Length: 385
Ligand SMILES: Cc1cc2nc3c(=O)[nH]c(=O)nc-3n(C[C@H](O)[C@H](O)[C@H](O)COP(=O)(O)OP(=O)(O)OC[C@H]3O[C@@H](n4cnc5c(N)ncnc54)[C@H](O)[C@@H]3O)c2cc1C
Image 1 (cartoon, rainbow, N blue to C red):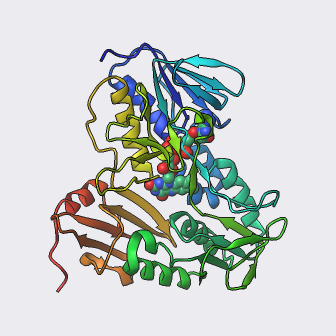
Image 2 (image 1 turned 180 degrees about the vertical axis):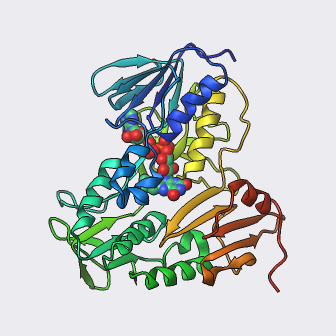
């Protein structure tokens, strides 16, 4: 396959910028167009739920740099794609042709408000983070709906400001992903820092207009000055209607980030990795996947083979002042082996062994280079005595 005459990247964020940069790293000298939807340009999202909620001066440190990319940047969202004519239409009426298209429009926050119900707070963009930070400044109480990574980070930010916070979910904090052991540790630690957890028997409904509480299926009603929904994300696929590229889970890709349409590739939070055999379709909307897939999509657009996996297995989060770095397969079932330190002291390296001789390794409150954790995860530690 010869190099494409032009590459269009839809989505000016981590996956899109990584793809653009990798095209240049691989020596591609043809025209690259980036279509973005946010006036702020490209920026990093993980700090939004961490440092940005406490420190306004950090807003200036988020930008993902476009220097030296020699890309044409159009800040007007894509509203339609025609994969037969190889063209994308933007909201300002432009029609941009392409030879290869990389789809990287990410995801939006999933919202729970009823149609017309105002005041639901979510956290996906810099504007969301600024609004939440302003509201935290004078809130006397908070409810967070959703006890996943994002929900627990937002709850930590509330607790760090001394705001009593209640987290509501049908499952204990982080249990679906990190398993019972770490979930129990993190829940206990969060409770010591002022975070209350309420387990619902099903979906919570937002109450008030503007929103000021939640109603649980058992009839319990909770109210607070601030209600933040952290209920997952929805892939931004609206502009792909009619192309057959996207469904409920996003845009399906294989390990080369190719989609069902030749010449069209996808990367990052908009994607799911297509399953085969007994392996189900799988979404993994994490930073390291967006980076790996951005690079792979760029290589594939140039007709080069992927040089890494489209599913990176590194993730990190920060709860109640503790950084948790994870390398390896999830969820984590059963008890870990403690390789170093102790969870009770808030500083430990833990390992869960798998039947294939690999492990999942977690650095809990300890600064460990990811490369060291990857090396540990490639082996299987003996169980703790
Ligand atoms: C608050 C927060 C904290 C996080 N913390 C962590 C963490 O600690 N660790 C971790 O591993 N991951 C974390 N993540 C996840 C990580 O940030 C994402 O995996 C990553 O941002 C995905 O990059 P992306 O480029 O695929 O998508 P996105 O970052 O969502 O970017 C997609 C871009 O496309 C734009 N767009 C949407 N529709 C269109 C359109 N029609 N036309 C043009 N542009 C469009 C969007 O505006 C956006 O700018 C966090 C995410 C959030 C929101």
